[in-house]
Length: 76
Image (cartoon, one colour):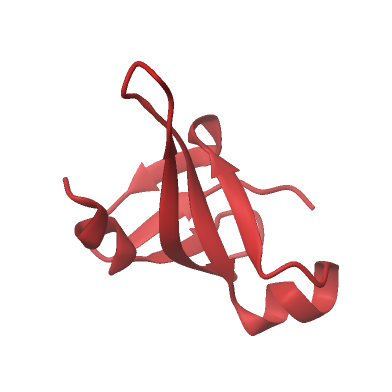
């Protein structure tokens, strides 16, 4: 799967069903393994929880990568 494929998917939190945002980048370690996704927060997440525009979703937080969405578990 390519980064462009991931960027076209919405990132949704399974805890509350809300859209977290869209992927803008990834972190890859020195061995070439994906460590985390960098997600540009939706307006809800920016205004409610912090002023930062990005959130890092670590690989263990990813529940499922589907055709249209990526389900993550973020406990706030």
